[in-house]
Length: 86
Image 1 (tube, rainbow, N blue to C red):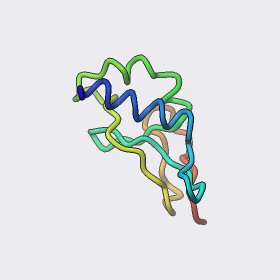
Image 2: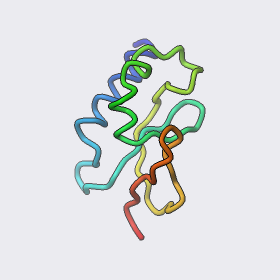
Image 3: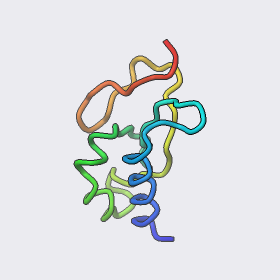
Image 4: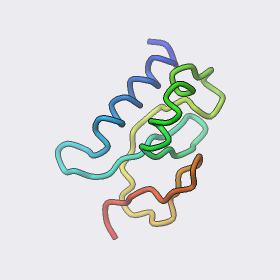
């Protein structure tokens, strides 16, 4: 699987399912450079994510639950990323 296809598959899954199942915990996209992306930015920047070179900041490598970090913000739009527990 290429970097682009894996990144795009994760992004498409996240856009359709922004919460874990089971549990319903909110997720965010983690990029290869350690950045966090919210669902809105993944939707808006889907083309960049799908054509990532792997080291350009758009390579989504995982979907992660933000358990308690109230200071986690999207690295693209700076919106707060929802957290599971307050």
